[in-house]
Length: 373
Image 1 (cartoon, rainbow, N blue to C red):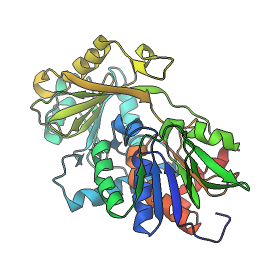
Image 2 (image 1 turned 180 degrees about the vertical axis):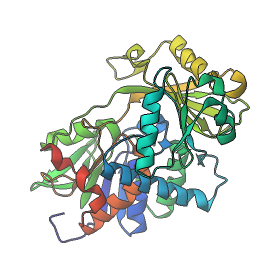
Image 3 (image 1 turned 180 degrees about the horizontal axis):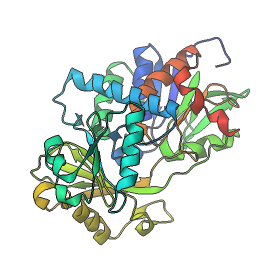
């Protein structure tokens, strides 16, 4: 930050994992925090995220390192209480469509080259590596990443909010559309749609796919590549699945209460966005996704959709996270990333330090919003 005065009052726009995590880290360091949500907590992307904790596949080295640090923070949380049903480390299993075994092998070789724990398995080896999966669904080979995990973000948000309230944070639910207040070129707080102002020494905009629109009136352009997506929660079933599965027709992870969370992208064109901002999808498409997931479970247990949520999945235009202070508007910070689940805890930690000390953390150096200027 340009000012040498450490801000003590911080206003945060967004009640998802990035906003809540940063709020709690700020409170731990003695800051006064007001957290404003358009509707409820985890009501947008954090409420419909597959939330697979990983750094699988190929990406830039800084992004890979940040994601590894993100998974590490979850491991610390997990170690404090391995019995939490909403945070588990059972590994990740992925495979490609028939005829793409060479693509899978190339990905495995890359993961090994960067020291990522990656095992190339034949279908007959899967049962020994991870339980509850129908190996006959795997056409040729699969990659098992033993160090990966998953989290239910609504549960994590609830867990963090207990500390938020205990430390005296101020929560403003259903604030509607909010705007960053600016005076003399510097962020001075947040204004709600009803005209209420929350004065602050620093502001964090962490409202998922809506982040670019919130900072646009400040003269800041952040390209938005967010697609529409859906997360389906199933009814409870008996199963032994521990790993997150990423397959050609369904992505599946265990979920609290013996349920599953499902998503993919093949049905995006079947989602309709209505003028009032709501979304719909034919029931038969939801069932088709559940049917695809059922084929992956040992015994092919029939999965029945219990509920589903649709909305925009936050993805910056270049695919890389956007973290840090806006050069055009000192005192205003942003947090906008596709990997909000994996980075949720580490991003909150690093951003809170930057907000309070003004010192830029080197792990966020390549993710600054100024790269779009």
